[in-house]
Image (cartoon, rainbow, N blue to C red; front, top):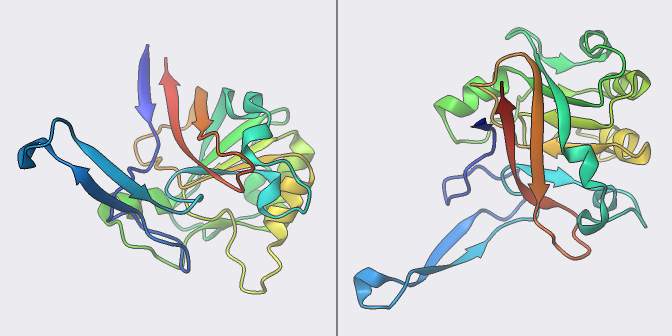
Length: 209
């Protein structure tokens, strides 16, 4: 069995969404300093790197990350390659996803940009609200993206999050898909079990045939 890790490595250099706390890894014990073992303190956002958005992220009374259906995050998935000139995953792009697809991961030009630099870029390719509604209509219940947010919204209303989470779908953000070929794979993803968590940093891998 072979795995392709599609997670973002967590390090002080890891990009954070504007306004979110950065990742910090602070050594507390080091063998090189005479300690018996190595140990570090971690500080980060609940939405650092690759992470799962549960309903509670945007919906009052929504399920937190420790009470979501892990079955939605594990199982057959489809990686969909979006052309480099495509600036948004709208309904026309969503319509290329076969009906009945339960889990979809979108590989866009974001992944190639992440491969070149860890710096945050505001002009990332994102899902539109009509694209989200089209995916739900096809039966999709997990949407994965290679950006730190599934949507690019300047209104403060966050319609894509509300559309997906309100329909019972989950969102997987911060993927690194530059090396992921288009096609069908097995996805394995488990977020940290943060009690009442509004988000869960996760390790996500594709099982390669």
